[in-house]
Length: 188
Image 1 (cartoon, rainbow, N blue to C red):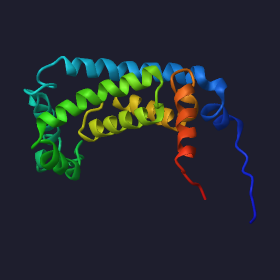
Image 2 (tube, rainbow, N blue to C red; image 1 turned 90 degrees about the vertical axis):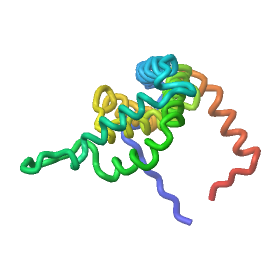
Image 3 (tube, helix red, strand yellow; image 1 turned 135 degrees about the vertical axis):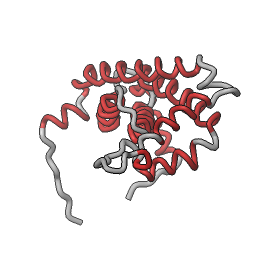
């Protein structure tokens, strides 16, 4: 078997694997985590977002997104809708029938992503779910701070090994790695 060595330039190595970049990712992690935690707490405390009577806010959000589709374009205008029809179908068929479940999931998900990022526990996973929520908000035609949080979350995902070094991942990741060896995780 022939083995090849691939060299990595200094910048990606510094950014994504060097412990020297841990302070940078710590600041990014705290900022993104704070934004998610505050947004989630606001939703959890709001009865139209969280609880058994929730769903009103998500219905309004989806209705606003559906108004940004090609169906509502003026006939003579060159239309570039904010929301694509495939995503509008997802909102109509998967979100609108279950507004309470989606409202509760979003509210709790935002809090969990925020906590995970702030304490630095499984940063890659928390950042992935944060980026997924940002992507869905952007697909629904909401810009706000979502592109910034999405971009920073992608950075946290790429730097998952070092992004939580100044946090619980410093202790959690080695234990998870040793557990995977214990239970026979194989690599070919």
